Length: 485
Image 1 (tube, helix red, strand yellow):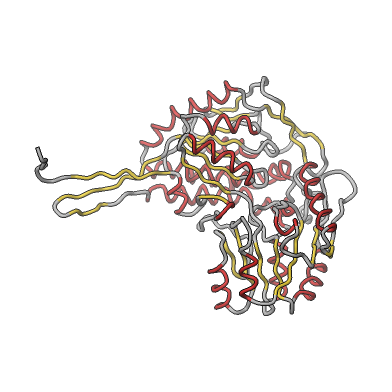
Image 2 (cartoon, helix red, strand yellow; image 1 turned 135 degrees about the horizontal axis):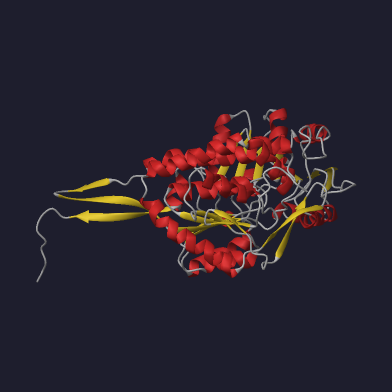
């Protein structure tokens, strides 16, 4: 099936599309219909070697370039992405199944924001002068070298830019491996960067599953690994990277709490819960899938939530009036159906949804369970699908303790009209990316990342610079050197 901005080969290496049909075939499946709309080949050892070799060759000259020159390339790429937003959004919809009503406003636009932000920041990456009496010292911020980015399937364009933009701004090269489920969008990011003037080899995209990722992460020439993925994958990648003493950023999963107090604005709280559970068909790592509702508001919340879910338009994601699309794959839908069955078996009350929608594609109703208790599987494990668990609570102290009783720590949210309480509660919730009277906002200006099992390091904002560069300290003696002998 032809579609706009269709990539012309499996890989983008050394400034051009590259094909090697000896690699394992990876089918590209359109989630809305289940049709195979294309294929790519996994990277062979020869492709991986060419990607690494070209990146190492290009990186040294790129690092020596004036930082503002690096920034201009990124800003030109941002402009190109915005000019082509519609075509890139359609490609994102084919890749992921997310509705065009989302992708037009979130995906390529967010990627362009990252390129623009870090392009503007590049020229400000300076060290500092340190006075030491008559002597002095200074620091120099230097690139790490060769970075590897491993992407998730839910935001293929955005993640390719979130990792690539700070890496390139700091003077590094990057090899990006998208998820094998959504392989197309990162190729267009690489193509646009090259068109904007990025020297060949500095941003390479190679396809493949775990074996390709493992080959990249374990290669001694790689200096940094940034993963967006699940905790089990993160454990493996982190361990492999640690064996080579590589720098890492791990953006992993979550089971985040969304706390709604009795005094919250009902419409805003319901809207926040919808954004935190059903946007992108629930396939968002930071989702607030444990929704704690104070008992006085619980029934009104469930009633209004059910009404608004009934207004969701489910259907063809290329129809801009549709606002709830299919899941990314048949396999992921089966995983989520398994959790829905567990929720019912453990005694949670099914308030809404829970069923597969008839017809083609990987559609599943938005699903809400109430009367969920902390020990239920659906309250403990990340589902990564459109399933909300609603839990009751009575007091502030109680909900803080229960919200923190998880191995994860990615996000947290609070809805209340009492701003003192909002800040007080957020201050005690153990999570990296938090929200007050809102949920799932992710501007590039703010750091994004988690604590505990949800990962290490931060993406976006000035904080990302720390994870794609290192400091060199220089001591300068102005007088004679004194030695004991």
